[in-house]
Amino acid sequence: MSESVSEAHIDTEAAPAYDPAAPAPLNVPRTPTGNAEVDARLDRLADADHLATDGHVEVYEDVHRGLRDALTALDARPGPAAPAPSHHQSRS
Image (cartoon, rainbow, N blue to C red; front, side, top):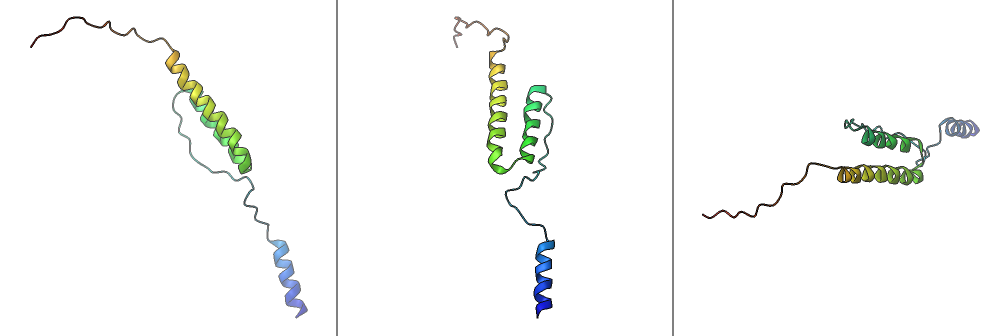
């Protein structure tokens, strides 16, 4: 009886403890967009793979802020002038 108890004790010590909060890579593929600024922000998501879940928020907020800034910059860039409104009305 003492042998079976000691064998069970050894087996539980040999098995690694499972920690559900431990960092684990998500291995989500990221396809390059062709925009260096956007790609750099998306690559930052890989930093979350090495953090516990409570650290993910900081990474996600940083990436979101950077992507939002990149979109805002698109609106600020000068583009071609809009065509002048036509005052000529066609009659049918």
